[in-house]
Length: 434
Image (cartoon, rainbow, N blue to C red; front, side, top):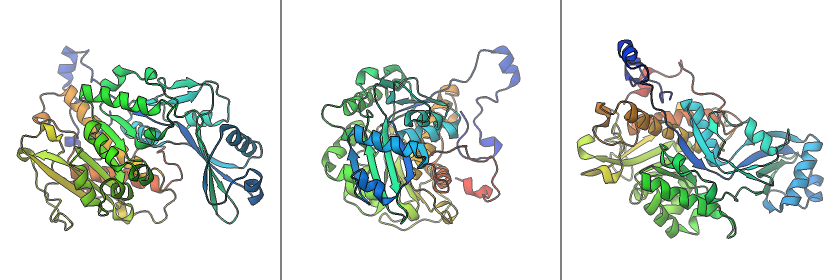
């Protein structure tokens, strides 16, 4: 487990750097490692440059998104492949992206549940998915299926117009019988997405997600839910609120999804409302930065040294140096909030907005897993006199999430190819204070 963020040496937790004399006496006393789990609709994002007649020939509407039957999608993909029209093909899926980025940041194991084509040919989407997924993501629990994984094909005409052809393939065929209960219940977190509930009635994906969430709840494993898009949420707002109340520890959303879920357009107010049902909230707000909100016991509150910020909740960041907790673990719970503006004012040129929220969530998961890792290896540490959800303060986590999100915005792929640099001239030491 690599430590999250960047700190002075004295802030690294003393797990692997034990006294060498103690190591000689206890040679088998190796650090206990953990993992995070996630369920996803396994798919690839494909970008291709085509002429308008290509769209007409395949019956595609310019500028629109169309869900295609597998045979139509296969014909389009085969022609793109044969004619060399594909510009890029990256592994996708919100949970797949999040777990990949988590494993790159933490240099540690994550476990992905989903489906994978039983027969894989070099150059196909399944092959590309495997090639662009970190080797630290454990894919051994994927369910083999006789068919294609999902494909989101973006077709760009010379005028820059984007049209979308979606092939679901077999991505919603994950059976509850193919989940591993032990892996889920021993994890530091289980990550789900609202997309999993959008499958057709005969497809088992929604049942798999509910089963996994129930197993996690029974074992006290935090359940993390990303909200997908506002269109998924707004038609079933009451249902999602109840689902969060019953199953979810952490909600990750953007401002549009927050509006759809709570009716609040202000991201801070939306976070505050979600705290009625969940313990922790991450809300990305585009050029406005990101917000984090949670609970802490009154005895564990730490006041900020930063200027107090105005908002719908006056001076809302007063206790942002506190570490979030489950509300049930607080004797006298208080709500805590923080906000951070885009890192370095945001990129000069944004190359990709797809995956920035997933990257921020990966950073938060890294901090949560580091806390679990430290608690298992140094249970007597003062860090664990109360049961916290993260190793770092709310403010520290927001800085880390903000920094990781920036890395995705300045590249084409939604997945990190490397972790953060060890030293950054653009960052003063004060950036990580708090």
